[in-house]
Image (cartoon, rainbow, N blue to C red; front, side, top):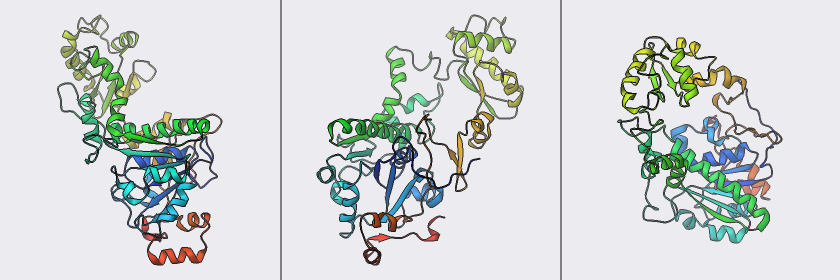
Length: 397
């Protein structure tokens, strides 16, 4: 497992300066994506941390903060406002994830910030968007996916709706879509010289991720007679004799043909020539359930190891980090004792990297304020007033 040390910023976004207002979920993930690609991300955190630091751990354990620098500051302090304005005036990107209106009340709304810095890309991350009847309402990942019509698609056929936590609304529909919007806006501002505001809503991002499912629904091919909604016997998960699981997905006819041949079912009337005969699917699924639960997972892994039959083990997160393919690709790295996914995707000439481990709360307060031209005496005065805070060893190292 590779251990990441502090290194010089590089990557396609080297030289891009980002100010991130600390939050939870998609905002920090967006900032992490930008930092992985070389952006200099200054994280504005408040003393005591956030709910995110309580939920996911703070300091070195906060994976989403890798590659960032922490400036601990009281945004409500009159002494703090001009400091934040200086940071924003020198930034290329701002990321915030508060409810609509909060940044305006703090004095850091888009009108004020774009007046300070007309080239600024102002990224706003919310669940429901900046306007509309639900804009001021609270929510979480599954709520946004639910209202987008996406959570329902996560059900096993005939079962209760669900989806892997945080992936559809928060990270995919939220942070990833916001990062995509920021990348597009950065490219455009090179031509126009003007900044703009990005209104990224997790509900809308979740719907965007599900465009293919909406396509199937429009064709009348969703839920019940769909090859990928868990109703088909050849696109499902099956329990093995040891209680472990397999993902079985020989969707294409050529893969299905070799799949049933390997199982000795090529001449079985329930399977031969019946792949898309939906009337046979329940019987086929019962047969496959019985077959796969007759042997441990390792047996099936070896049986299908050299095939394109699309049969693969369902790995735990720990198993995933130890899989030979993931190790060969160095798909996971170790930072401050935490195993985590490596930066992605891979760029050939300007590769992404993690420049430093997640910072302690306020670890870079003094450094960042010094870059704004503040003297040591001025920084000491601000600390005494409570406008800013410095890192303490007990804050999560």
